[in-house]
Structures are given as C-alpha cells and as structure tokens.
Amino acid sequence: MHVDQLSSAQLEQALAQAETDYQTLLSQNLSLDLTRGKPSAEQTALSNDLDGILAGNYVAEDGTDVRNYGGIDGLPEAKRLFAETLGVPADEMLIGGNASLTLMYQVVEFALNFGFTNPWKNGTGTPKVLCPVPGYDRHFSICQHLGIEMVTLPMLDTGPDMDEAERLTQELDNVCGIWCVPRFSNPTGCVYDDATLERLAKLPSLAQGDFLVLYDNAYAIHALTADAPKLGSIRDYAVAAGTEDHIIQFGSTSKVTLAGAGVAFMSSSKSTLTRFKNHLGFQTIGPDKVNQLRHVTFFKDFEGIMAHMDKHAAIMKPRFDAVLETLDRELSGTGMGSWIAPQGGYFVSFETRPGLAKTVVALAGDAGIKLTPAGATFPYGNDPADSNIRIAPSFPSIEDVQATMDAFVLCIKLATLRALVGKQ
Ligand SMILES: Cc1ncc(COP(=O)(O)O)c(C=O)c1O
Image (cartoon, rainbow, N blue to C red; front, side, top):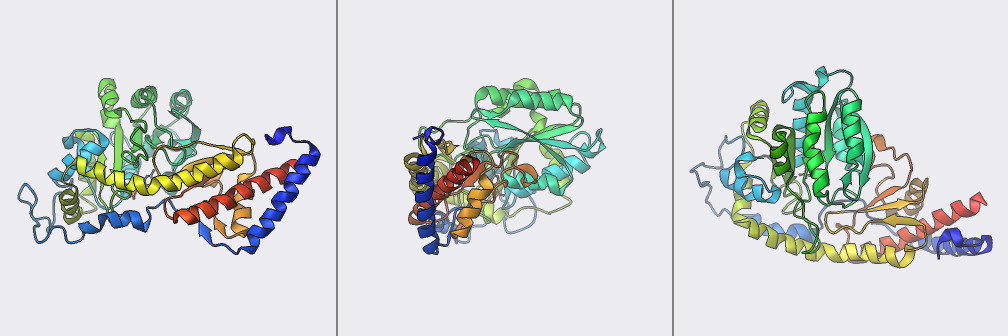
C-alpha cells in the first residue's frame, strides 16, 4: 500500500516493525559493499587468455614491431576493431592506453589551455561545462580539478533535457561543452533517443566559442539482453550538421576485458584527432601497442567482441535481476522511492523521497552495508534534493547482492517511515 494512504496508526505500526527488523539487521554484523562499478573476478577471468596470446608474434599487420616506440594513434587493426563498437569509420579513431578517463582528461585539459580552435580559458568568464544529472562522478572531478564550472541540467528518460541544454548554451557566457554517457548512462541507464542525438550534434553551433560534446560511450556494447535499445549515430547527425570537429567519443575495454589493463580509444573528425595527436606527442612517444595487438588477436573481429559481451551479460543479468526483483517486491506501489530498470550498463539509479538519500546511506553504513555516498552522482557532491542513490551490483556475488538489497529496502522503509511519522 502507498505510504501516503496509511493512517497514523498504520504508519506507527509499520515503523515499529521496521525498527525491529533494523535491530535484527544490526545484530548480523554484515560487511557488504555495493559501491563499486567494476567487473567481478568472474568477468575479468573471461579474458585470462589475453595472457601470452601473442606467443612470440609481435608484428602488426603493417609490419610494425609492437614492442617498440611509436604509432601515437594506435595500430590500424585496433582502429578497425574498436571503430565498430563506436559505429564510426576506422580512420576517425585514435587508440590510446589503458583508460578512456585519461583521454577525457587530456582532451578537456587541451581544450582548456590550448583549444581545438580557441582555448576555453580565453572565453568570457569561467569556462562552463553542462552536466546532466545524475551523472558520472569522475567527469565532474575532471572539471572541478581543472577549475571548470559545472552547470547541471536534468537527465530525462530520453537523455539530457535538450531544451535546457540549448537554453543554457545560448544564454550563459562561455559554455564550452557537455558530458554525455549516451547508452546505458551512468547511473540512470537511459539510452539517448535519436531526437536527443540530433539536437546534441547541433549544440556546438549554438555556442559562442569552442564547444565540445564529450561523448563517453563507455557502455556502448554493454547490454544485458539482446533486445536492449540501440543507440543512433551521433556521428551521422554531426556530419549532417557540420559539427563533426566538435563531437569527441570515448570508449574502452575496461569492462570488456581487464579494468586497468584494457584498451582505451576515442573518435572524432580527422582534423580534431590530428590536433589532439600533436598535443599527445608532448606526453608520450606512443601507447602500449603490445596490449592493442593482444586484444586484436584475442577478439579477431567485432563478432568476437559481441560473443564475449554475451558472456558478461550472462554473469551480470542475475545480479541486476536480484536488485530489480527485490525493489519490485518490496517497494513497488509504496511511494517510498522510484527506480529505472536498466537494460545494460553497470548501475541502477534509485530515487528516495526528497531529503532521505543521506539518511538511507548512513543507516545502511551502520549496518555494515557500504553504499555509494549520497550526492556522488552530482557535481560538487551536492544533490539538491538529497534523493539519488547509485546501486552497483556487478562486483559482489549474487548472494551478497541479495543480502545487500534486503538490507537496502529495509533502510529505505525505515528512513521513509521515520520521516513520515516525525512529520505528524
Ligand atoms: C561512464 C564511465 N566512463 C568511463 C569510465 C572509466 O573508463 P576507463 O576505465 O576506460 O577509464 C567509467 C567507469 O566506471 C564510467 O562509468
């Protein structure tokens, strides 16, 4: 029953039950963690065969000895392979090191200080980047670290609120970019629809100065089911709008092969990549091409990657099911919170009633359940409604995910009922 329809006596009774259950939970001395958006050991083990796969063959298809310096934009065969994950031509790819986050940081720093056209820092006022919220905390840390102001806008089921994105880009001084996670966004799991992609591709032409769509396609191929929504091509919309220099896509195999020892890549127009490549040349003589060749040898082709992703989905799906079935069974129709059932990615985003997220995370913490700190999905750690909690079920065992979710819903009930009874 919906909590708003309960009488005072019913609320008191429900609260008394929740308090008793919480005491039992405390007595269990649990130690569980639902914070880490990283693959489980079972998932990383899928890529154990990377080890030693080159078996002495260190020569790339163009004759390059991958054990030596050079090739700043990566091996041609790696470009071809990973271009398919982003849906772009291979000659619009740059293959980097082990982390797409590094590429994102380098791109933002380059745009700020040197500029793909004009340095962001030379614009009128502090450079600003639009941040759809809730979003990915490490995008926000890059901005904060580099002194870039973050301007939030709502994330809808279809992607960022584009009315707001267009308005802010036109009305504020020095809006220089927007962060996007277009497929299975972190944390809401939404997939941007075509209308959003088309408007995003046109956004750079509304800005006064150099504007970048920072398009972090981290979960491009991370579907949980075969019928998960597909993502349209922002590149095609950008080519039609003449903005392809301003769209920069990122991706990696951190959650395909090995997190921290995978291959990161990015895509943009040839001229944008050339500018960035020249900048990269001051930082490195070349990326880890041995790892790139290992990955190409391991996967062979895009079908190889997708077959591998099916194995990930088989491991991930039961964990997501445990989360969603528990939420459905315990909270559906109660008005105690809302959530979206994602069809891919790594997270479930939960909205408590306003003002309760910190309390829920603290209650869970006292019971030995680590949840992502409330506010982490917002710039400066500030969720104005104090309602978003990011659930990351990939790393623990299914049993631990289930135990954590049982505790989580109890903390939601307790926090909600305490707030409702306290108000009366
Ligand atoms: C949206 C998003 N982008 C990037 C990353 C990190 O990618 P990488 O390991 O390639 O740096 C993550 C990791 O959680 C992520 O969620």
